Length: 441
Image (cartoon, rainbow, N blue to C red; front, side, top):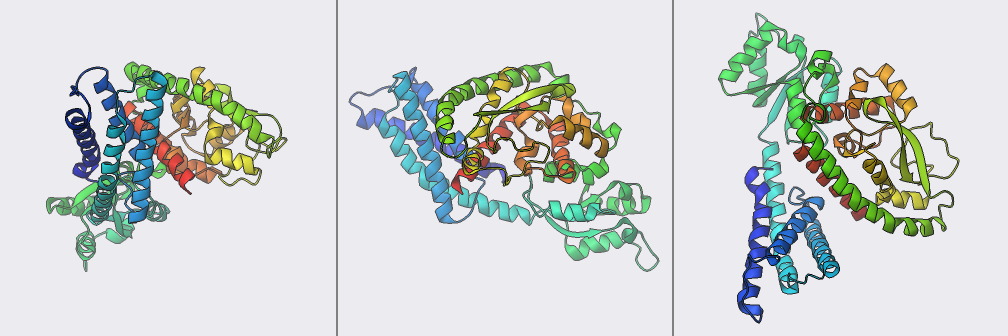
């Protein structure tokens, strides 16, 4: 999504809420009041922030789709913000944001959100045609690249053609095969793997194309920017020696811990409410212990005990991989997982500093031992604290094999390289979107 469209929704939200508040102040309220006086102004900002958060969680404005679906998402997002602000004011006793402002601004913003989402969808479709990619890669990487570009990507692109390095070597009959391929495909982005970069004949052709306006990227950089992960085929030990902010930037580590504590404290309140509800629900279809504990590997390889609401039948084996539609799940367990309620007890692990809100998924010790023997650099993921959610979790489904673990590791390396508070917040936002999607199904 282009930056102008990206900022259109929050700017219009700010304008509509403040304009509605101004109308109420001058023409609806019995007495004219100032919008900037405290604590009224604070509640205006809280309401605007809530709309931003719920709209992002609903997938707006990125999600285009049909008109009816865009309307449903916009309505759900704004109603959620209305309910939350109403409950907050009720509990605090600060009825300083009038119902006129809450509901009239929401009514205005519903069609605004629908239009902006439609514009965003059209913009993304146009952008997908802007980056027309040809890749010069060897071996199995060509199939993997073709598969990866078919799914959701960080930046839209069309993979027009894939060729092997051998096919791009100059011959007497065709001195510039790379230029010919770019011309016939009308590509504007050329991706070279490590083998292609080591061949002077291919690099010379790429330099000529670059002088004519074709963008050149390494396979590693293309994966990083467009796909949001790092390809293991391009990695060596030296390429993984980048700064990790959780280790090398104390300010980030402290900020991340503060964010963890704030969310964990709120989560503990939700857990206190959920415990009696889950206990009653379990009586009707999930009899057995309320909680489930299991050893997991944390930061620096330290083993800790993770805590969750039990979703599987008691006595089941924990030696097999967990799947999204695991046959060991009962109806209640499926419901708890779909609503992500089973994750709430992990807030206790966050308070104990065993888990973070965002980080690589913590695995069982026997899986770690197995994967460390079969996957190169696997143990590097334990340099940081594992998380309840993470970049790999939101970009890849449940892993059920070492192949899936390998795919997820590529996303985890991306997180290690780009770790920051803004990325953590982005992951949390996308996690909320996932929860919204699951509930909407």
